[in-house]
Image 1 (cartoon, rainbow, N blue to C red):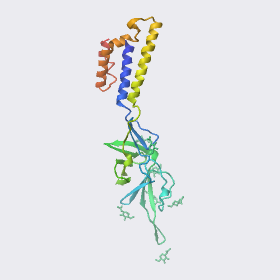
Image 2: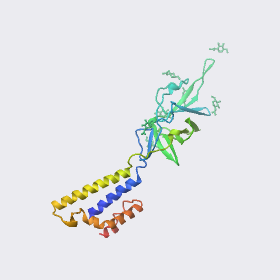
Image 3: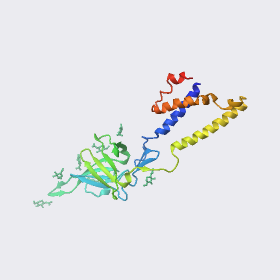
Image 4: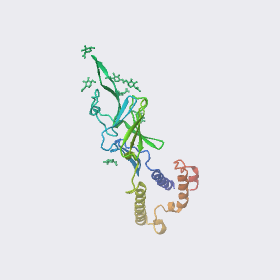
Length: 255
Ligand SMILES: *[C@@H]1O[C@H](CO)[C@@H](O)[C@H](O)[C@H]1NC(C)=O
Ligand SMILES: *[C@@H]1O[C@H](CO)[C@@H](O)[C@H](O)[C@H]1NC(C)=O
Ligand SMILES: *[C@@H]1O[C@H](CO)[C@@H](O)[C@H](O)[C@H]1NC(C)=O
Ligand SMILES: *[C@@H]1O[C@H](CO)[C@@H](O)[C@H](O)[C@H]1NC(C)=O
Ligand SMILES: *[C@@H]1O[C@H](CO)[C@@H](O)[C@H](O)[C@H]1NC(C)=O
Ligand SMILES: *[C@@H]1O[C@H](CO)[C@@H](O)[C@H](O)[C@H]1NC(C)=O
Ligand SMILES: *[C@@H]1O[C@H](CO)[C@@H](O)[C@H](O)[C@H]1NC(C)=O
């Protein structure tokens, strides 16, 4: 009897997992793609379109952003910026210096993060890229704005905490409808499993145990108890799939 109960418990648990979906799953290996659930994701691979970097200036700070692919600061061709270490977000400011009587035009910079530092976060309805740099107190953040403007751009919000907005048509949530959903695959597998279970189990019971009549149905006790088990299951589902529910004494008492 206990195994019968365990069997239903597993079926309902699988059902709950299927209904709840795979929300929160984050593809840790590709900073360009954020999987929201099995039907929707964001792909910022080509969100800058044909540009290598986007930039915006606020007070004396210019930010250079290259999305989920790194760029080399030396490619900016700015005096004083000659690092070839790959970065995805760079903060640059003028740093002129005196040499003899002349003032030499130069720049200084801080690396705010590489593509591999990107962590996807959701704040309100907005997704954002947070550069998880362990030696920064406030983490540099690029908020993604799904925008109809044909040309992607960035806008500096705050130079102290390094907050930016990145607007592009290609940071929007992509919803796919084609293919089988996890739910359909589950139902097909369930059907296949039930067929094997009924036919295989029936043959075993018929030929090996010598069962006849209604006893040929595997776990016939279970099927007899099905109506009450379905009721249990519905209560379990409506109670928010709390795993503790099914093992309460009430469920066992009935059997
Ligand atoms: C993301 O988009 C790029 C091109 O825009 C494509 O090559 C890549 O396969 C896409 N990745 C996913 C996971 O959809
Ligand atoms: C920008 O830099 C110049 C000198 O390089 C300075 O005089 C000015 O105050 C700075 N502006 C801000 C907003 O920091
Ligand atoms: C980079 O620039 C600094 C001065 O800003 C200079 O001392 C250094 O030699 C340069 N490095 C290279 C590889 O050009
Ligand atoms: C610096 O300025 C002085 C005059 O103010 C001039 O005589 C001298 O040639 C200058 N030196 C350089 C390196 O430009
Ligand atoms: C760049 O700025 C940092 C402070 O942010 C400073 O310590 C460093 O000396 C500066 N480098 C140059 C070449 O001016
Ligand atoms: C940033 O990385 C540290 C470990 O390096 C981790 O403990 C922390 O949770 C991360 N923060 C975010 C917002 O991902
Ligand atoms: C953080 O550490 C990196 C190297 O790990 C260094 O390049 C960067 O300047 C540091 N930033 C700050 C604000 O200390």
